[in-house]
Image (cartoon, rainbow over all chains, first blue to last red; front, side):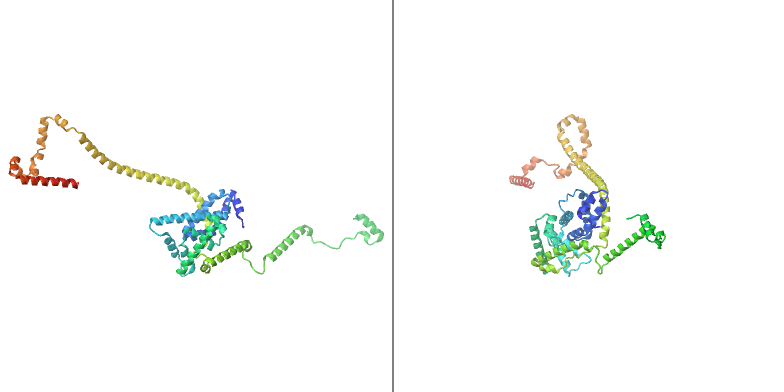
Length: 181
Length: 245
């Protein structure tokens, strides 16, 4: 049964259908959110933990969701915040242990069992890690998810112009990295 | 419609054959009318199934949910084209790279995810209560250990300091002269006898050579130059010591 967000929210607010509605929400958004997170943190286990955290937060907060924004936007925003917090903590740990966190993510990519340094897809992944976190987010949402700037603006709470500029800078940097590698 | 009696009287007047009211020669199968409704219903249902089959079995198969996702697919391809057009202007190399992520996820991960998640939401509610207590317990235990450690080490350190300070203070406050006055001469004599070993070993300090030393004679035998030299050296050594301090 294909339910739209409004119907799912109504079912969630009804205590008799709350759990089944929540399961339907998970089914509907899990893959998109998983890949959104995975592209930022690279490692599957970290992604899995964070995806669970995201849905736990959704479970706790959905009842008070005021529908000022779309459910999709709200979920992406939670996942994005979760990513940024995780990366911030990771960076602090790396500073403490005198490691370079960007190298840490690149090393995680290189440690992937399917990694092939000669393939452009993998080179692109390594290039993306050279970007600052927010620029990385913008690039991923635009390049991989083909997300319109308008939607992205609602998720990242940034103006469309700023996002466009950020994406253009990111794309040029990545192209340079790939051409020079 | 005219009544049956009218019709029969009319027939009697016109013919002698039909006036007796001959019945129909047709027979109806037994219980025909009893089962008619059921039979008709089954015929209607079968017709529906056939019509449905005609509608749902096209010549070309369509993937499941094709029409449900059609609008999304079209919108996604419009967005993708927009992204590619944009990239062709700013970084054309990136269009040649597949926009699919090279990472993989284990089979059935998404099928099983909601179960894991439901467990997580349930567990997290329970665990939250437990974890708070655990945290408090650990906090209390850790705080108690630290406090204990500080108290024990503090005791040892403070005790020594207090001891030293007390000894110093007690020496400072002792009225030596008063105390000596209180002691009788006999007691003093006894003490000096018992502590004879302290006075009997003066040779260690003074040395045998100085036993018969007569200071006046010794000074007379020293020349003025030697004395000045000695005083000068003694004065320099004091200065040096002071500087060193």
